[in-house]
Image 1 (tube, rainbow, N blue to C red):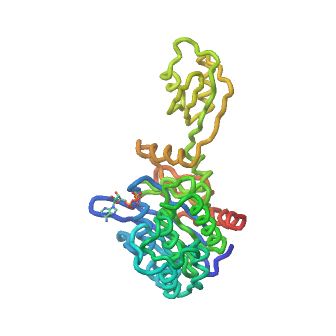
Image 2: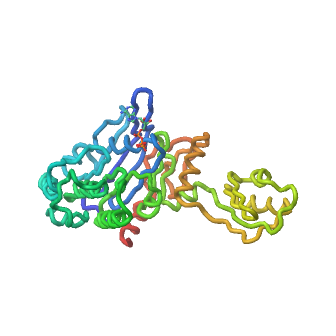
Image 3: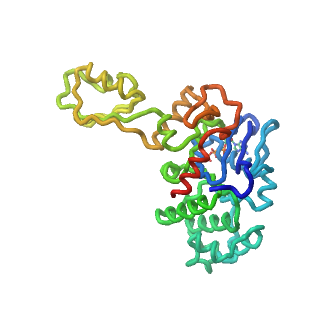
Length: 350
Ligand SMILES: Nc1ncnc2c1ncn2[C@@H]1O[C@H](COP(=O)(O)OP(=O)(O)OP(=O)(O)O)[C@@H](O)[C@H]1O
């Protein structure tokens, strides 16, 4: 996958901050996204996702000292040049017109617009092209928004909670359409609360927390970074006096669930937990140590940050999977990491 537009990153945030009154919504974000990458933006409510997308689209300006560039130019210029397609949560659709008319208008207005039938087909709207927009279901409206975002040959797609309201089938075809966009070399950035979508679709996951980048890596790297594992087993005989509190006190254990003889625990140091189990005189049967899903890793990372163990997720400019300590890296992400190659590989094999 190569960019036909030189070597400038699709997206480049440099020390980008945004303050609303007393609220520091975005706190010195350094991030680069390259053509062909599909990137998920995750974060709890209020983490700064919408602010990030607003800055990216030129709807707001970063505070002085910060900078946002798309393809080496300003967001506004990139939008004017038709290089950005966006699907936002806010903003109503024109209700009185037919689906085809609305999509045709977007195709006409785009500097590199596609034929309307092609766009309708790709968005799964051919069968409802003659319906009035105001009479569509929520999921159908989302598909219209997607069609508007892909009405022309944009180089970057920005999607805010794109599948909200879509049923399972619509979601599946939506993501398959997005994959084919990425396979054509487009950069895709989407904010979502559906972590399984981020896990399945994204080459790279950015986790925002209180306006700072908490983690930046593949879903596998984020899961590993959370460092928490599930330890499950059954106890053949529970020795007298062994109670949940004792299991909870084992090294690394943060959570214990007991259901009869079945025990499930979460541990940040599974080896130490298991050794200590034996030391307690317990003999676990069917012992399993498994990794967490992205959702659980996300919860572990963000709650750890809430409790004050926050670290920034900006890579140190060295190898993928390296994470800086508490001091933010001065080098923007992506200068030397292999993320782009990885993204290209994935895009090519999807
Ligand atoms: N126009 C505004 N004026 C004042 N504060 C704002 C404004 N927009 C956002 N904020 C605040 O900035 C912070 C980040 O908000 P933002 O909407 O970017 O978060 P988010 O990650 O998109 O949240 P959500 O998942 O709830 O949509 C929040 O504390 C929010 O209350």
